Length: 240
Image (cartoon, rainbow, N blue to C red; front, side, top):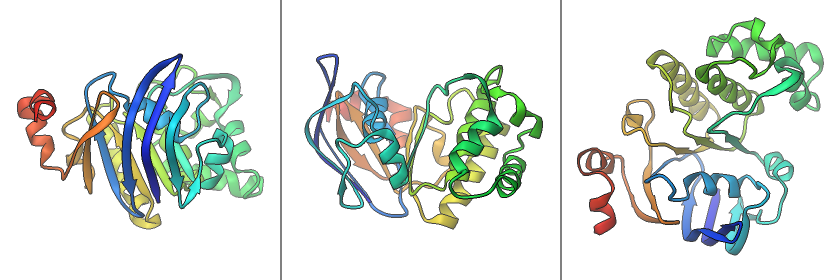
């Protein structure tokens, strides 16, 4: 599904990604971990087409289609979804207006409202939130639930979750990952999870764990490597 080959990326003349390679098949979950500043969020931004991130070299293929120079809109239409680490607030636009806009080409208004209500129930989101301004005054957990709400409504093929688990209480974590797991099982999508949380494997069953350091993946393994990270940190892996 996703094939990243020898990728080099810079922003403001600073080279952040330095020869990164990554292959993800259909119906797989990949966890990406690594120290702060290693390029994890940059990788998610580049895949989703964020401006100002310049690809100096390499290719990003999604279902055999080159997406290097596509806009975020074009990339999202192909079926790639990015959940933001820090979800933005949009003052003056209600959640319902926003969600209706992204769904209006697929469904009529009555069907849209029914689908939104259904997903809100799954995520235990109060329906009244739909008529508040988008993320304005929301708690961190409510904003993260809103990211998953959009994911469940859009039904992407590739989901990128950038620290979806950070700062959440145990109840919200359980709700979010319960819905992610159900979505993965039903739609056979692939998921990239960027995280610092070594407890992540309690909530989701991963195929691979990648360690990203200084702009490239230096180690790929199964979930057992997370125990080594908990015990020794990243220094031992970097040294090896």
